[in-house]
Length: 141
Image (tube, rainbow, N blue to C red; front, side, top):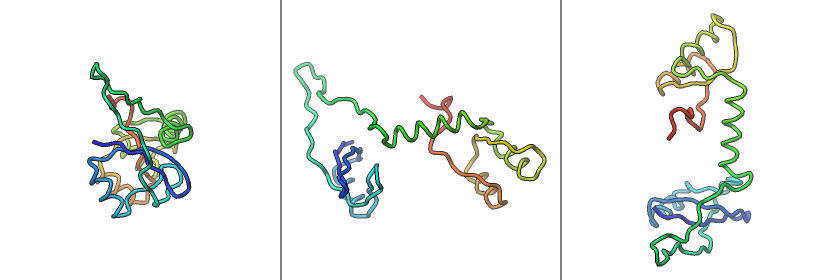
């Protein structure tokens, strides 16, 4: 893995990890890179200092910290909003979402887990569902 400092044509600076140096080039050429702040696809490598090990073998690289208002903070804010304003129903999500859609259960905001095929079936039935960009905290390390 390799970490690059990047910048977009709008002047935003951010960092990202790539599988290899050629991985960056491949993604850039295919148009799959975008600014973490504004979404611009005009992304270039920025000047960066290399990570060098000291005499003790420890890296001089500093731990990455979330940029204020950056994607990590926005994702954390979304998680807080979902957790504070809806009920986690776990693997019962499909059953409860369908029951609410059919009027067999009172409507309320819920979130939970569903296999891709189950979520697709709900969407095809007209049940309003959307994937969340995070998993329940109980399933994280």
